[in-house]
Amino acid sequence: MARVALVTGGTRGIGASISKTLKAAGFNVAANYGGNDEAAQKFKSETGIPVFKWDVSSFEACEAGIKQVESALGPVDVLVNNAGITRDAMFHRMTLVQWQQVINTNLGSLFNMTRPVWEGMRARKFGRVINISSINGQKGQMGQVNYSAAKAGDLGFTKALAQEGARAGITVNAICPGYINTEMVQAVPKDVLEKSILPLIPVGRLGEPDEIARCVAFLASDDAGFITGSTITANGGQYLA
Ligand code: CAA
Image 1 (tube, rainbow, N blue to C red):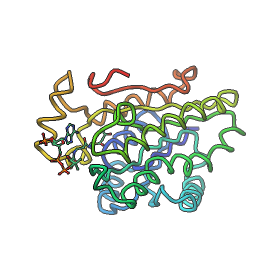
Image 2: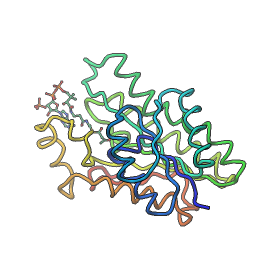
Image 3: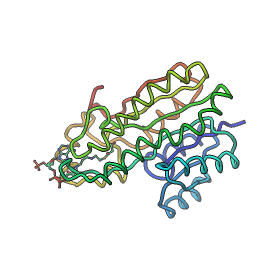
């Protein structure tokens, strides 16, 4: 039986690439998404991967959504916590709403999504939890106090939960992408991207979503069974953690 993989934010950007790569690797994939119905339907018709809509910042929505996925596909073996948003602003202009939205979506979602699948993984003695953090959780980024705090929190979550899962056959790892060629990075003002970001990437280009998806596929595989609590850094040499 193919293992079931659930990818949050799995219909666009890095998440879409992760969903497709896991499907190609033989997983039975479900892709969650938060709001963009049009993109989700296009993704579904192009890939044949079923899509499920809910807000990962709500615990109740995650419980209900995961129940739907499990009745359609079976228990979740691999959870990829990929969904994330930016609400960039210098701290002196950042609002409480911008802070809360990013913390709840990018960090709160790890609790909301992982808690409902955790007991099942423990009972079955197998699981893979893969959290998509960010270079900016490692190094901090001006204009992203909210995002950097949430993404750094994702790394603490990963390291602590990995210790709890180890004896139960569950690995918990994080990936820290650098600047990847997605809509999120394209939303950065062009002059900031060209003058302040690209020159800092030693390989001289943005990363591609597939370059992150291949890291996820490796961590999800049986080959990665001895790797837990770790962080894979994939940033073109921009920050050497
Ligand atoms: N790196 C270095 N310098 C930066 C910078 C960055 N990422 N972002 C802004 N700056 C600099 C600007 O170049 C500018 O410098 P000068 O005054 O010398 O021109 C200064 O900071 C102020 O910037 P703005 O004039 O743009 O100020 P603003 O208040 O209009 O906007 C901002 C502030 C919203 C933070 C805007 O600059 C911005 O969006 N910056 C990009 C922040 C960023 O890197 N976000 C990452 C998004 S992608 C992502 O998050 C994915 C991931 O995981 C990597």
